[in-house]
Image (tube, rainbow, N blue to C red; front, side, top):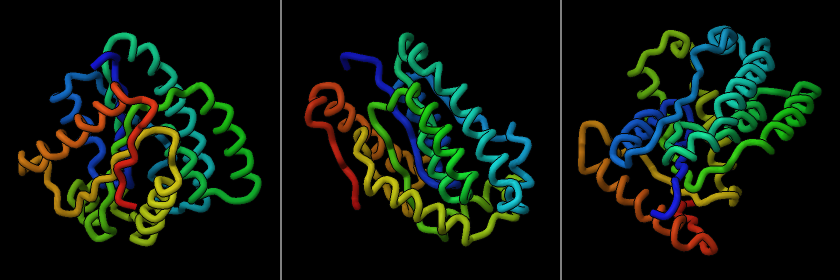
Length: 216
């Protein structure tokens, strides 16, 4: 490859973003940028009362993600990078959770910050059915996620589908993960890694063509 590649993994809560990012980091020998989410002091209250704590939660995430991602150019000066989130997810979540003046203020702020954040060379969009997402969330058993509503995960999953259906800023691979187990079945990971490597060849050597390998 002729340059340092930046890969972002995206998808709804519980789909397996961090697991894949860690595995790609290992096999592709990149640096790793993981979202810092447990430091959000409003997160636990948000899942108990989303309407009351949505604005505080989303603004904290926006600022946190901005500070994390503004250093991406420096990281790419040292080598490739794999991240388990995309800066644009901030707006996706906020659009789902905010209304009225709070949304208007948030959108203006996000737009100003997003201008300083580089786009990835490739996005791997992981999708799964709501049943599978709920099962994975229950399996990892984070205390603050125990009260997470199925309706919220369904709405979030639909928001991701809508977002990527119209996304054309960078190449995207969409992967249905319902039947995948990249941890327990090495062959599943090998196939996914091969798909990513094939896509990266297109990114590096045919930048004018790009790719749009989705199942929408």
